[in-house]
Image (cartoon, rainbow, N blue to C red; front, side, top):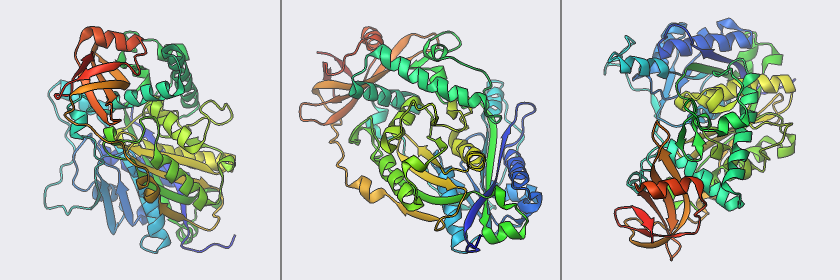
Length: 490
């Protein structure tokens, strides 16, 4: 095969489930890096890394974790990156690495991340902190990537201040747009998640190794409480994990120089990124993503593949609504038995280590592209379906790595007018109801449309209304909205 020596290629992926003694996150990343080098068939590759790019961690505060990983690997790196919060960062970092390698700025790049959240939470309960590495202000700040915005005032005042509330709101919008009954839609998403669980059962790197039926997932119980309707605990991302993942990207020249067998190579054919409107209230629709549609089309076009050419696919799966929106945007059916929409099992079952899930997805995708010898696609998502990064992987190089932003296409879609501090009548558009730990409905949160077509977000603490909204379809019902962002029946 005659290739440009600067062609970027992914050569190894490593994943770690730390189930026994707690391990510091940077040590977990270093372990995953060694596993990635072993997967590449070139263990010494870890010492040749010249750039380390780490996904933002919540388990511990580091100033430059890439520097610590380099020290543990005895790698003389010239460049480090540390991101802010956002689940799209892993794929974006791999896109960056491929671009930098093709331009000759780097030769061997490690992208990785880790979370030891289960340990941090168990120690917090006891009022303790782990004895992990602390870096003072004398350590230079690495190159950074910003956080994705997640605290718009219109959302916070309405109680919609976390993913566990906003993604169920999207789910209700999907159901209403499809015209499904509450029971029929619950059955559909439970079936989708049961298929994800089946994939996790065949994934040796999945955190959860227990089979759940669709009925298990849909039915609220003491072990599977309702979190925010219609989502039970088993429809939420599972962040109580100890996981790390890393992938190695290098030039073809470096892969040959360090003895990586060619049958281990997987080529990143294309990458694309785009962001939807940050403010939820301003989204054109709550059941769709112009950014995923635009970035997905762009990535496929750049790769030289069509949707029908794809083999394995991994759609970011923090909640069922994220998968359905992405599948619809890309034109993929959600119930094709020949092509599950995950290669890992998703963030509920494979594990949801905060920002780093997609590093696990990419490491698994390498394995699946090698196995199937077919191209694969990964989508990664930050915030509330806000920022997206997409990569297309293949066993052959095509014309080399190509990348383009799809933002101009997204910006051409007009946002919805927002009615903040609105007072007056409005029709219910979508909603969710948060439940307490005993399963009782507490706060209803909703998006509503004013007579002028603007969207406003509001909440209700009324127990009777909260109860009704968990069982009845009140879409289109008129409510009274107050300027303090509360709503009640007219």
